[in-house]
Length: 89
Image 1: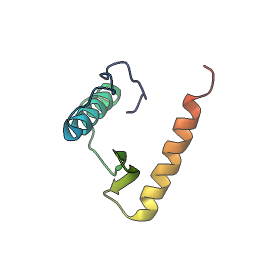
Image 2: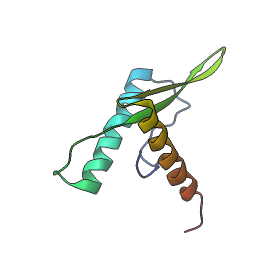
Image 3: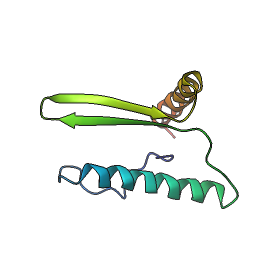
Image 4: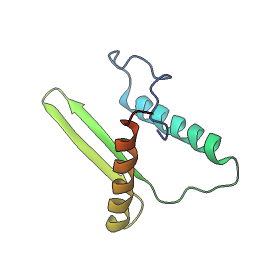
């Protein structure tokens, strides 16, 4: 999510349909985009990073709609944004 907020999420300890969980996150991201940018925008490139947890371990799934070097740049920007969230405000 753009704001990194968890206040609207259900308790993740309760098992939910994985597809529903991911779709809820995408919908929340869309709501945040609309709140920040209004109605005059279009979606450009994107990268999704999802942790997939199984009884035998976990993995990461990464998917994007652009050339790999663009995705890497977007991930670097996201890393800086996430690092900034830990700073005292």
